[in-house]
Length: 301
Image (cartoon, rainbow, N blue to C red; front, side):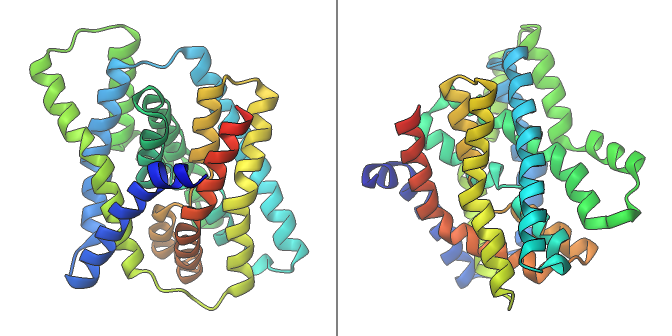
């Protein structure tokens, strides 16, 4: 387990710490940086890998089904536990933290360090699926009954990541030629996403402020870091997924709460201080919990 922490988790922690230290020393517009990463670096990365490493349709369908089942089961567990502990007032923001892991900024580098390029295209596909869930279910949770589904769908289709996914799948599935003069700069820009995303995560941690929601924060954090990998493990076993995609799904969905949910909570005024608290706590604790998850999946698979 110590070797896993040293070889996989520590490199992530070092880059996050560098971003944290830089933000503590200098004023940085982290919102603009996060937008730069999600609207430029992420689409380039998604296209570069999907265009050259297409995922078989049957595997893509199985992974999508696994993620949908996982989300539904985890939602039911979150609702049941928050009602059991009489914390219904924070149920909506709690669901925003438990259902949506940080598969991009955190999960992608983790998968790259743990399993290499062979698993990276699978991890990118998980990120794409997670984006779709965040901009549908996530917005529905944040906006409540005022959700406009036509507007939400238009918003998803307009995302640079959606466009990059569509183009990448077309080039990959139909084996369309892509000259190196175009592919290499696209790949180069996309590869910058991994370290930049971790630096941004560190900067966002430097800005986070914990709020006084001790019980609810502890419960949501336990669901996100402890129950999530257990639920996903049960799902991948039930679906009979092969070891590599199973590992990718379990590890990525064991990461901390997605930072984008903090921004969404602030935009829709859904207890943003509570969402930020869960994001901060889960990110800090995940360096230890993910070491255990990585060790466990190696034993099981």
